[in-house]
Length: 205
Picture: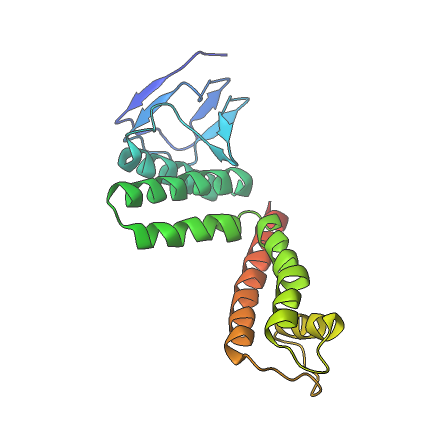
C-alpha cells in the first residue's frame, strides 16, 4: 500500500486507475477526475462519510474536492461511493455556513442530516417516523385533547390517521387542535419522503 500522494492541480485522464493507494493520507487540491477508477484503495470513513487529509480548515477547497469525487463516481455508476462523497460534500457546506455565521441555513442542513440522513440513509427517517407517530404524538393527543371519549386508543388512532395522510380518515375522529394535526401531517410527509428517497438510494446501490 503506497503511504500517500499529493495531487495539486492535476487533470487525470479518462480511465486512469489508482491501485492500493492510501487515500486517508493523500492531499488533494484542484484535481479533475473523469471516470477515474480506484482498486483496493484505503479510505478513512468517519460518521458515514469519507474524510480526506487536511480538510479541516480548508472546507471551501475540499467542498470542490468532494464534489469532484461524487461526480466521478456518479459517472461510474458507483452509487455507494457517490453517496458517501455526497455526505462529505454536504458536511463541508454545513461547516462553511457555520463559519460564515449563516445559522438559519446551517440549521436547515443539520435538520437534513439528523432527520433525513442527506437522503442516503433510510434508517434515520424511519426511526423518527416510528418514535413520533407511534409514541410521541399519541401521548400529545391524549394530554392536549382531553374529551370524554378521549383515551390512548383514540389518541393512537388519531396519530395513525395523520402519519399516513394518503389514507382515508375515519369520520369518527374528532380534533380540537387543528394546528397540531396539520403539523403532524406536514412532518410525517417529510419523513415519508426521506424514507422513500433513502430506500431508492439503497436499492440503487
